[in-house]
Image 1: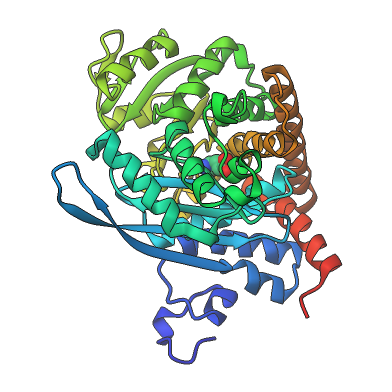
Image 2 (image 1 turned 180 degrees about the horizontal axis):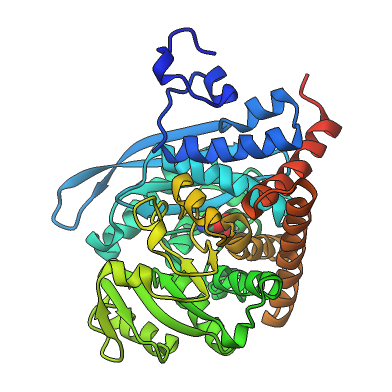
Length: 441
Ligand code: GLU
C-alpha cells in the first residue's frame, strides 16, 4: 500500500496498490497488469514475481527533432519500454501512431512478454513507438524521422538485447531504414550480424518469407485449432472484421482460401456489408487505391451499429486497442471473438461477452504469429540461413498449435476463461525460469 494515495484512489488489486498505482479503470496499462495479476493469483505465483511483472523493467522516453521538407523542425516524442527479459532478449514492435502514449506502450510490452512465453520463444517483451501520424509525412520526412529515432534509441536496442519489429504505422521499409541506421553505427560486429537488429525487414535485405502475412496466418492457425471445439467448420464460417490493414487484410485473404465468408468490414473510413461475401483480395486492391473500405462498390455502406449487430460466427477486431467496450459489446451477435489486435476488448466488454457465452480467443494467442516469424527471421539472420515459405508455415503452425493446446489445457485445469488460461500458461513458464535462476544477487 502507498501511504500517500487517498483511500478512494487506492487500487483494488493489492499488488498495484502496493506499487502505488492510483486507480484508473480506463487506463489500459492498469487493465493489462490487473489481468496478468489475476492469472498470477490463480497460479499462486510468488508475491515478488507479481511485483516484478506488474511493472516494466525499463521505460525510455526521448524527444528528438526532425527537419521537415519545408525547412522547419518538429520535435517528436519516442518510446521504448522493456517489460521483461527472463526468457531472452527483449522483442516487440515499433508503432507510429498519433495516439501512442507511455501507458499504452507499457501495456503492449506486457502483452509481448506473455505472447513470447506462450509461443515458446526464447524472447522477452518490449514495445516502442513514436507519437506521429505517418500518413502526414512525406517519404523523406519519414526516413529522417526513422533514422533519428533509431539514433536516439542508441544502446537501448541491440541484436542480443532488444530487437524491434513492425507494428501499426510501420512496415518493412521503415525496418530497412532502422537496420541501415543501426548498421552504420555498429559495423564492428559485421553487417550480417548487425542486420538482425530488427525483424520484419524486406526479404531482399534479410527479411523472412512469410513475415508480412505472419500475424494473419497465425490467426488462421489459431481458428483452425480452436473452432472444432465449438462446432464451427472453417469452410462454412462467416465473420466480421474491424481494420483492413496488414493483419486484417492478410487474415481475410487466407480465410478466403479456407472457404470462410467475410460479411462486414469496418475501418477508419466507414463500414460495409455484403451477405453474399466480400472478396478479400479485391477489397485489398481497392483499399490500396482509396486508403479505406468506404465507397467499395461491391458492398453496401452501413452504420457502426449495424456493423456490430450483424450476425456472424466469428467477430475479428484487427485494429486499435479498446475498440470493443461496454457500449458496443452488447450489440455483438457472434459465437467467437478472435482478438487479432492487441487488447481490443475492455474488461467491461469482456465480462458482457463472457456472460453471453461468447468464446474469446485472446490476443496473446491469436496474434502471436507475427512475433513467431520475427523469431524465425532473427534466427535465420544469425545463422546466415534462408528458410523457404513452406518451412516457415510448418514451424509457425507447430508453435501456434502448441500455444493453443497449452492455453486450452490451463483453461480446463483451472476452470477459467481462455484469456486467463493463456495468461496462466504463459506465466507458468516464466515462473519456472525465475525459480531456476533465482533473483540476483
Ligand atoms: N508488433 C507485433 C506484435 O505486436 C510483432 C512484434 C515482433 O515481431 O517482434 O506482436
